[in-house]
Image (tube, rainbow, N blue to C red):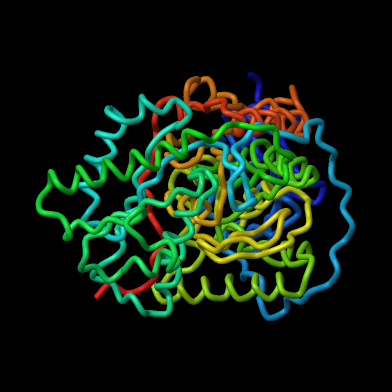
Length: 502
């Protein structure tokens, strides 16, 4: 396909090329003075050293050298601008936004006894209190799948909530609240049907009372391995408990439910320069359709919104939300500073190869997956929401940390946008993969569920792809399996733990 230029805003002094282009080639009327890789930026006019480079009508950085019109601008040529100050963020009533109306307002899900969000899957989850028991639980899951699960056709799967936390940790350190609440809240994920099964050792620091309410701590829900005389006895007790839980889960049936029973996560990983103009805006439109229909949608990744935090503050519907946004982002700034890094450490080599020069450019493309809806609440990593609508969940940007944090906060399905490609998946909730460019879908036909690349080629609009994604979300929520689920591609649950290990 012939290369063309995409300029996002009339104020921009750079554009990206849709295909790799060679020096001397004329692309959209501009003669190139450099070879330019796919998705990378080309100067639209002569620019001087120290001049601001604009994309999304935002300053990406300041040039370290003079650049002629038609030249390539890459990550080595830019100095980062200062990040927006948190001190200046204040609440003001957000502008009214007219959200698109969804054509569908129901899905087929699993209602839960607590009346909260519904499940999109029917899963037995076995939670560990400490890494020491994970080997036993892994063997247990294998036996359940082969010996018990065939008897219960309405149960989709059994998963082990294994983690690296639980012992050798400073359990009462202030930041320990993050991993503890994350594990505690994961137990109650709507996909698990209210059935609690916790396996502990008996000498760990993460005691059961830190994960369960007093009335939940009983022989029906908790097994401590040190109370049993040997492996066979442990497995017999665990299989008996699992069987009783599976009987109850097997009684769950899908019913027609309103979108207000849905909690969806939005995440991106392996992003490129197309992500912010194809996959993420399409996800943003799907998010607006969901929120308009009454669903809850959460987006995350602190470092990937940090340079647009002022834009998020303007969309918050309350002073409490703005104050929480400032507190969470401020805490994260300090967290990074303790490690002698800042937000500039975020972009990966793959991001840069895909045309993203720095974290500002990445952030501007990341934020658009939240759509235009007002932000009704800001929550910390692993916290449970108290409101329905669009939420910002202040999690790390790492895919394998963000996912478990969103699970802990109650998502029952995740939408994952990628430009470079990733086989990422979750065993606890289905993950829909959306790619930003056609070549990614062509390469990974059986890993990418939806291709947003047609937006870049002009074959589709953001609204059209967003509508397709919205319908796919409801289909998957109702039981359709995306590729990651079909192939059992599941990542380890890497809970965010900023607390000390002693």
